[in-house]
Structure formats: C-alpha cells, structure tokens
Amino acid sequence: MFLKRIELFSLFGFRVSLDLSWAFLAVLVTWTLATGYFPQSLPGQSTAAYYWMGVAGALGLFVSIVLHEFAHALVARRYDLAISGITLFIFGGVAEMTEEPKSPVAEFMMAIAGPAFSFGLAAVFYVVEAGAQAGLDAPRLTAVLAYLALINFVLALFNLLPAFPLDGGRVFRSIAWWWTGSLARATRISSRLGRLFAGAFIALGLLNLVSGNTIGGIWLMLIGFFIYNAAGSSRMQLAAATLLKGVPVTRVMRAEPASVPADISIKTLVEDYFYRLNHRFFPVVSDGELKGCIGLEQAREIDRSRWGGVRVSDVMTPLGEANTLDVGNDARAALEKMMTGSAGHYMVTSSGRLVGVITPKDIMSYLAIHLELEADAVDGLRDAGSRA
View 1 (cartoon, rainbow, N blue to C red):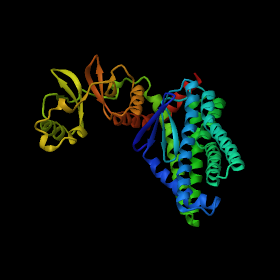
View 2 (cartoon, rainbow, N blue to C red):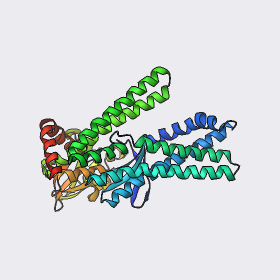
View 3 (cartoon, rainbow, N blue to C red):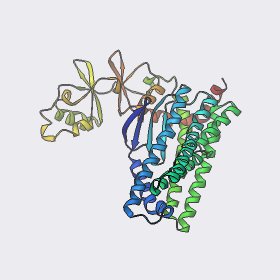
C-alpha cells in the first residue's frame, strides 16, 4: 500500500510514520483551503494570510487524523490486538494490524473508536471556535477552528460509510460476523459491499468529470479505486492467514542457497556471483559460519574504482534478528515479520546454521498457486475454523 515511509515519532508505544504520498495531500489541502475554502468563508484577507490559514488547516487535519488512528490503536490494545504502527498516507491514515480481531465485539469496538473520537474532536473545535468568536477579535483563528470542526465531522461521517475496509465497513463486518458466526463469510459479504460503494464512487467521479468538476471527479475516482483494491486485499489477507498458518517455513523457502565468502572483494562478488548467478542477495559465510548478508544495493553504494580493495566483510549486514528467521517458524509468522520489518530477504537458520533464504515474493508465489487451486476449500476451512 505504501510507497516509502518516514518514521516521525512514537507515542504510547505506537510508531507514527508518514508515507511520501501524504506530501501530495498536504500540498493539495493547503492550496484548496487557501484558494477556495477560506476566501469564501472569510473574504477580504490577503493572499499570504489565506496561505497561512491553509497551512494551519492542513496541520490541524494532520493532528486530527493521527488522533483518529490513535483511538483505533488504543482500543485494539485493550482487546490484545497487535498494532505495528500508524501510517499517514494520501487517503488519510491507517492503524496497521498484524492480525485479525479475535471476536465481533473487538472488531466493533476498535472500528467505532475512530469515528467516535472524530465526532468528539468536531464538538471540541466547535465549542472552542464559538468561545473564540465571542471573546476574541480573531476572525482568521475562528475560521480555521470552524474548518477543523467541520472536517472532523465530515471525516467521522465518511468513515462510517459501510464500505469495507473503512471503519463503517468494519462495523458492518462485526455485525455480520456476529450474525453468521463466521469471520470468513462476514469478510466476503463486507468486501462485496465495499466494492459496490467503490463502484459508486468511481461512477460519481466520472459524472463530476463530465460536468466539469475535474478535481472533485479525480478525487472521487481515486477513493473508489482505493476502496475497491483495499476490500479485495483484506479478503486476501484473511485467506493468506489461513493458508500459511502451520505451514513450515521450509516449505516456502529456497533451500541450500548460494553463499559468498566474507573475505572476497566486491569486484569478485560482482563478477563471480551477481553476474554469473543472477541473484540480488547472498548470505555471507566465513569458515563455514554464517556471518551476515550482502545485497546488490550495498555493492552499488561503493565507487567502482574501489571494488578491488573493499571486501564483503567490510560492507555486509551482520547477522541479526532483523534479517533472520528461525527454521521453527511457520510461513504466517514469516509473513508477519516481513510486513513489519524492512529487510527484503531473510536468512532461515537453525542454531545459527544457514538452511535457506526466503523473500516476500516466495510467500506470494506459494499463496497465488494455492489460492487459485484451492479457493473454495480455503473458504470452507475458514468457515469451519470460525464455527469452532
């Protein structure tokens, strides 16, 4: 989903990151507020004033979305759901769950927490704006506060749409889960409903484009495509969790991978390994002992004129928790680690000895084949598991 994330800070034990796509949203929101919303709601101000108000409004929206996602994360923690972090991206924010809720109640409470908090923020901003308007001669401040009250109200209403995986869609799924007794069936129903809403957004966007509202039409279509893809991805994630649970990582990894000696030069690494074996990554060994790993990117960072004098051991990534998986893990645990980690390749070890290499692509290939051949069986298995 995300392009590239920049970690901003941690609060209450949750990492908050910013996807680069947020920069586009921040610029668009600031420009829209400075050239459209604030000139209409508060005429007669200078261009510079409108842009400062636009920046303040965008920052207020940023804080509001962070607090919305924190509400989800804190309730998730209350129900023992692991949240790997919070990321802000072009369509808002997301609290990143590493597992599905354990009950319909947990799903409902976690999903409703965000919109409820946004309604509360809207009320707070409205009261503060009313007080500022009565006691201060600060029309620019009150205009920004009025905007933040409005945008939080709209944010809450939008997220309550039963379009999975929006908050309202998750509320709907929790009710369907309670009614049917099956998380898998509830996910199928809510995913289809989410895609119907996505189609409606896309159609409405096309109508706006035809009527001349280009920016509004493009945004509606982008939101529609996002919901459509996210709804399908959520169902796939549930299927993946079922298919991978209990599958030994040895079934998915590439066994007996080629490795490179720690004492060879980068020139030898490139010519005898990267060029001849066509791999982008190699474990590094010394006297038969696994020491770390090295990838194509690390070699590229070294000036070509120095390749002959720099050894693999000088630039490799040392063996550690961040780039290894124990052979006793199942494929589901491996995927969860890949989703929360930054490494693109993982070495599978047994008592410190290299037994294989695994990448997200290996797991995706395994899933693609099994989902295509066993889709009906997988749905039945999930239903049976839910009833149990």
